[in-house]
Each structure stands twice: as C-alpha cells, then as structure tokens.
Length: 149
Image (cartoon, rainbow, N blue to C red; front, side, top):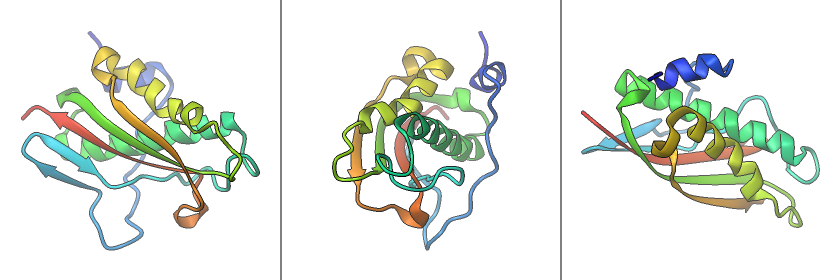
C-alpha cells in the first residue's frame, strides 16, 4: 500500500512549508491522541466567493488549505500514516451573502482526504460562509485528527 505522502506525489501535489502564524497562537495542540489545528488559510486565493472567485477556485483553495493542514500534522508526527481518523473539519468560506455553495467548496478538502486516506479520510464537517477572513483569504479550515503514538 502507498503512504499518503506517496499518494500526494502520484497526484502531482506536495506539502508546502509551514505558514507563519498571523497572531499569538500555535499551529496545533496535541492532547492525548488528538491534534487540534489552528485554522489554515491560503496564500494563493483571496477575495469573496460569489464575487471575486468562482466555486471552482474555492474548491482549489480548500484543497490548498488541506495541504497546509497536512503539513502541520506531518511536522507534529513525522509521517501522515500515523493519522488514524479525521474527526472533524470546520471549513470557513469568505463569501457574499447570496453565495450558497460552501459545501461544494469544502469538497476540495474532503475529496483530497478521500484520495490520500481512503475510508480513513471520512470525517464530520461543517462548511459555513463568513463575512470576512484574515488577510482576505478565500478560505480557512481547522480540523481535529486522531493519531497513533
């Protein structure tokens, strides 16, 4: 079986360098076998879905945000195969009042987890619209994962 890192390579994707915090917080907190991440925006997509960006661009932004999150987990654990379960995603979409495709945008992150982790990538999820996100990023995602020691 391929590791998640090998599957990333097969997909032509790679984990980015860790992004610096934009406030007084850490990128993740581990308690027992759970890791709670701070929200990860993206550097590539800015503006509001429904005005500045299309749903398709939002999907790609969500995928990139998930890559940023996986980089945080890899930094903590050393390898992504130590993830045993994706417990929950909170997907926040910078969107106009009338934009209603937040779940489709969030699929960019969820679909990537399915490709990399199969059934282990299934998770609970909320996808919500926000009036604004820091630095006008298109998306921010936080997650909770269960890991093996």
